[in-house]
Image 1 (cartoon, rainbow, N blue to C red):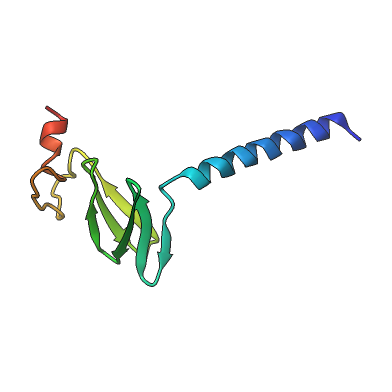
Image 2 (image 1 turned 135 degrees about the vertical axis):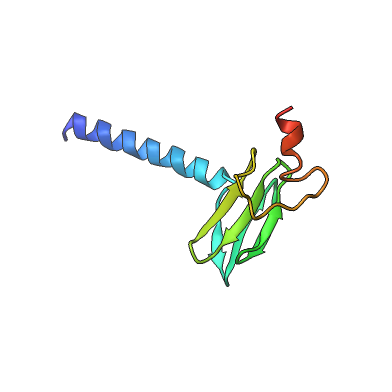
Length: 101
């Protein structure tokens, strides 16, 4: 057998294994099912309906967009003309004031 071929094959196998190990440990995986976005945030399972919102503990706002198959994450500073502006003491976007101070 060709030594170069075996070396390349072993390299890609190791890289794939490392990626799979990383992906399985990631808490950023999102499942889109039943018009909901399901994911884990700070080890707490989240299940947001389409256009539903969750205020994370790290000064972020998470918005489910089932139709586009994405979870939009808004952080600091809040976007200009933000239509999601709701003030909860200590949560996004109010927490941005203390993060940037």
